[in-house]
Length: 410
Image 1 (cartoon, rainbow, N blue to C red):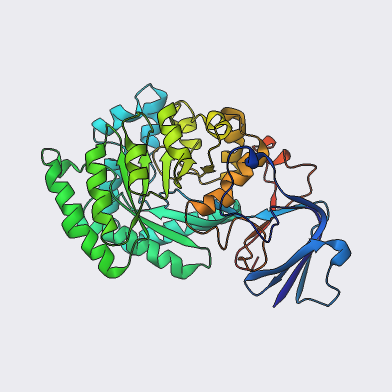
Image 2: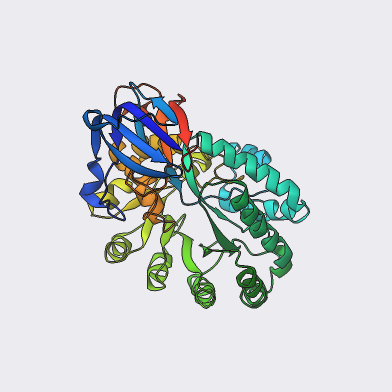
């Protein structure tokens, strides 16, 4: 089947020799082609260019994109999409001045979600996660990473990862699974940290590997969660099963998590609400992507990552939603773009690069996602008519996406 998108006002990120990521000053330059077309065959992009060279045959489907922009779908490289219940009670606590860390110490937060998930059947988790997946697809997300970490027992962590596996079978959207057993210390192991680490290393990981349930391994490296030494122990254990690290770190403290992650060849380090010059230098000298999650500090009323400083230093940054029931109950990447521009002083072009190609890199998918290139998956956003790229983050409350194509299908 052939689908022709024609009369595109502006085609963004079209490049047949696209790099695997974009960094520093290059993030400001977004490729644009006016009065363009894109030709899709089955699931792939097979051609694109100026309307002057538009194919003349009769395709199976034609889409008139007059006045619209066309760009790759978002690659959301950090989410917690599988969870049992929302946590609006903690939302009220935060309004009344209780901090994220105080809620966690009282057994709320992640432990709250874990308790609920452990008693929720697989089928219920799968259906609710699928509904969320369809929701974020309508916001323009065309590839997504989903973490476990709300189980915190062998059975519950396996249940979460099996739900993610089953989500993969229900959609053509690329999905990556990350094992985050080290998300929080369960109450049952409050006085036995070593015992829980042993459970992750010797019970969870072998079963996860045996069933092929995860692509990556993650650790919440923070004072309220796991130390740098514990993070390294888990990364080393995951490496024995071929699981590459994608690490939560520097949300509240600079404590060496970035350096340790880079030493273990992490694909990404995520959050980075706090960062120092030494850590920026380490990232510049590495292949590790810095993934920023601005809707998390927005929701918990914390300070934002220093994206402007990072990019001006020459770094590559990605943007992701951190969709979860506690600190970011939204997977709407267009709002993340707005926050990136308004609160982190990123230019619209930088934010779009960060949520497309660099997000794809943070999931090791830039070979088939993140740009409009011949041979890549036809995962595309077609906007409503608009005047400029800047309208996308500017119109933070508007629904400016008209159509979303996943693997060639609207």
